[in-house]
Image (cartoon, rainbow, N blue to C red; front, side):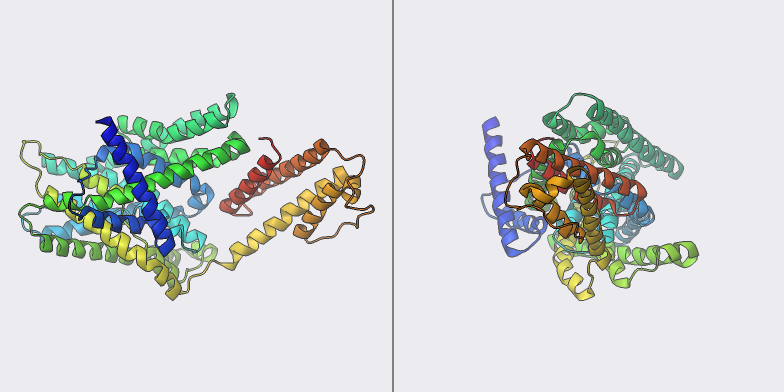
Length: 531
């Protein structure tokens, strides 16, 4: 039995790798290509049905993917965009759930409002994994990516809490708005508190205990599971626990982790997320025959038509929400309008179009209970599951595939400011390094070949000229030792890292740009053989 499962897992992984290579060759997002390929593969006669347990998604796959997404999202950028992220991540989820609830209540005979709200809570949240998988291959302004990824991180928690209330209402037949609101606030705040609390403990472990790169990496992989399971056990939001904990540890990673640990963790996490991404999206596609066969008395064409209508309304609600949510706060707040002028309609339209659904929608649908409290079958369970799957396919494929064309048509480009800031920071750091070289190694920098090359390198980057070499730069010079040269390189790395820390505290450059330069310093530091 174990051998069969192992063979199936290895075979699935090989199929995923081949399909990702094909998608890269075709220039199509791997997430979209894997969903389509999985759906087509599932239709081949003789292909075994692959049943997906919802616990596998919620407990095994979702925590590390959310954690990695939070780790890669800069906290300062997230906090700077907290208004649009909150409006879209919480407000839009509630509005979408309510809108789909009303639509399906009137369209489907005997489909109660509670069932409609349940379906709405399932299809409401755009998925962090889907958004990241599609957007990472497209060159768009960083702020749009930050808002979309931040929204996707918080709306998972909002939708799962609404889903919990909706299921309880259908199963028990009772619903209290006041009680639900109280539980919503408690689950959200306690989830954030648990995530930050566990992250603070892990911060102390990384900071003060004698760990090494391997230990730090193992702890980082275990962290999201510890946060998620603890929060869920205490009936808090596991999603918000993972997201808040990921933000906390990522923000302090420059203080707690060595260069070797950060680079090793990067490699492990890139591989882990790569595998989980591929498996998730192809498994979503492979669920097609299992979902179709559960429709029962409902005809497939009618179910597809209904799914198409729900998908269109989901997209329409997002568009109708995102324009007022973007422009009205600026219209009523003069200070906000001055500090953050009206964005172009093209950028707002693009954010409205980026509403791909994914893993959370499918996992929520799969966890709908089979029976009600009185032992009767859960009404319309198979139909809800099929409509959720249809919305995933429609939004991921239709919206995802059209994004590159849409970006070109809208003429959206990365602001020149981002490139200018990068150039300014490179010049500034080079000047800092050049100053340290001339202060501590001035004689060698003018007469010894390796030092001369380093000095000239930073002169070019800093766009200045100190002095011409006084000796033949091709000759090493007698005082030169390898250790002294490495000492100089360690010093100029340290002084640049210290400068980046100061710039981060003064909020002069974006945190994402600071991180990028810190990563370059990590690579440089590893190259001279120490951590």
